[in-house]
Image (cartoon, rainbow, N blue to C red; front, side, top):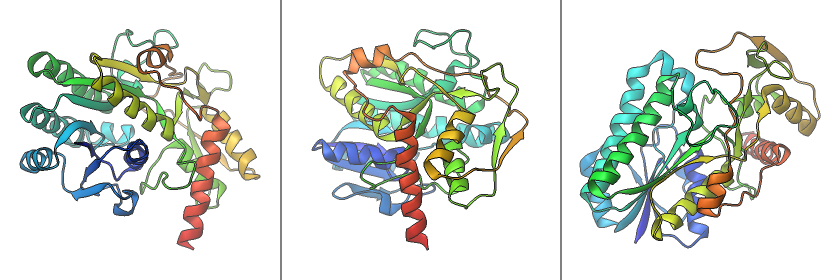
Length: 328
């Protein structure tokens, strides 16, 4: 029996495959390589190049690879772009997710894990955000994530497709052993941008919003190490293999870090001062977004290993240096 990981050649996906293989799982990856890389899929995982929205291909893979659980990571795009091109997001995030869920239900798959986003909560009314807080998505990206969550709830009720939804904030870092890291071309994530600036590959770091009601005026965000996020997926799978019920959980350490705090930490790690330039706020951004973390630890017995910001950024910097040396 195997685990299907859609989007397994991408950033989070490649780390998840490493986590599953390390636990002795048989892994099949389905990825169209639009943002992922063939080299990012480690052996002995099987890579099938194809689209997660292709129902015929999904049916074939689920049946011939004896898949017993699906982890749907395909379709990760940047939230700001969802405002500029929302119809592309409906296709990439919602329509294709519907095909994966429907194929799973039709083929008798009883376990499904989906990484959602803390953005589904929208502007928070109180912090930290618990899983019972109301959802009021402020961007198409968040709206589509919430739509997939609701589809899973309906599929569970109608077809018995048990699931775990993991709501993550900002996933960052890299594999501690240097086997994988953030390599997505054109990514605009803060950590990637700051590290590229630290290595001289960008001339400055834009900071979107410096007048928020926060201690240093910049937004506070919930960061999680990519390897800890991958471990949460494995813990979710183990939960579903037991008598565990469907769950929606925050994937969080329960603490936040400001944009300037991240940049200051990168400067200390890299040993250089960076050019930081203030920019206007972006649509959909909120001053602070930090989630409560008690439920995931209780429900999944998940114990993060790399929660310190310096460790997250240190692993990411090591990956960037390794990547830059390989490209030279």
